Every structure is written in C-alpha cells, then in structure tokens.
Image 1 (cartoon, rainbow, N blue to C red):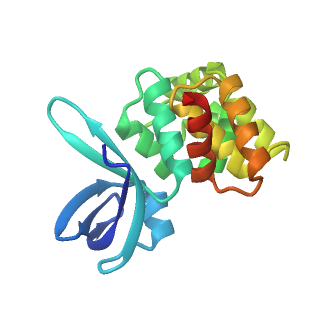
Image 2: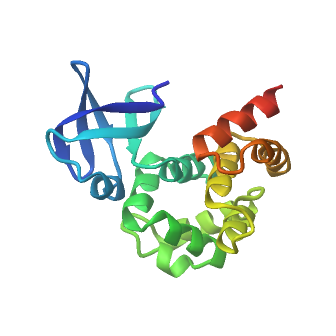
Length: 198
C-alpha cells in the first residue's frame, strides 16, 4: 500500500498530478481542494497522503494535502453504500472538509446535493449513513464545541475510518494524550494504534 508520496510535480492538472519520486512518475488523482492548497505546478515539491484503490481492472492512486481530506475520502467509500472514489472526490472538490462535516451534522442535504455529481438521494444517504455510523458526527460536534482538540478529533476519525469503535478509540487516545497533550495527529494515531494492538 502506498500511504504517502513526496516528490516533484512533473505534470499538473486540477484533478490529477504526475509526481516524480526518484525517477518514477506516479499519477495521482486529487480533489481540487488539494490542487489549490498545494499551489501545484510543474517543478513544485509536494507531500501527499495517499490511498491506493485496487480494482480488478485498475490500480488508482488518490492523493490529498491533509490527513483530514484522506479520512473523509475513506469514510465515504468505506462507510456509505453506493459511494465510490469518483463521488468521494467530487464531494472533496465541491466543498471544504469543515463545511462538509457541518452539513452532515446539521443534516443539510440541500447544500450537499448542490455538489456536482451528487443528487438528492445520494446526499440523503451520506447524511443518514454517516450520522448512523458510530461516533462520526459526535466527534465532529465535540471538535466544533471545543470539547476535544482538532488534532484529537482528526486522530479519532482516522481510527474510526480504520474500523475501530469510538469507545475504544477515545480510550486509547486519552492514554496517548496523557503522555503528550500537544502531539500532532500522526503521533496520536500511531500511539493509539500501539495501545489498541497491545
């Protein structure tokens, strides 16, 4: 599995990049939000979080500027029936992650259905299935209310995307946060995984 990619952009388009990593050119499908955030142009050095999606007919590499974008992408394709990578990328290209989370928490299907490629029924399914999934909207609400730090919330969502129950994820994160309250998201996730697997 390719989880991260760092290299120089040799081709740049709003929805895909070709990144040269030590002489190998990786084609990476990206949302417009990532393109904008990275100011991706030929010759620019980029550091992408990635997901390799494997199907019978193709191996496609998806890239994201932040862990948060990748987590939402994985949540959509893994937890919402009928949502594949193309629709998940349309969601990420259609609105900022923070706005998407707000729409899900508020049940705002009207705004979600304005995203190109997303109809009313799909928007309703996203809200229904993400609200029903253990802890996702609770975590977003806690982060919005300031009850948990943004990095702890992102780490919790990453653990939920990996299939852990919210109760277990929170317990493991609490242990890690006791040792280092200012740890970045990646360190929180790694530490929590060690607790969960230990």
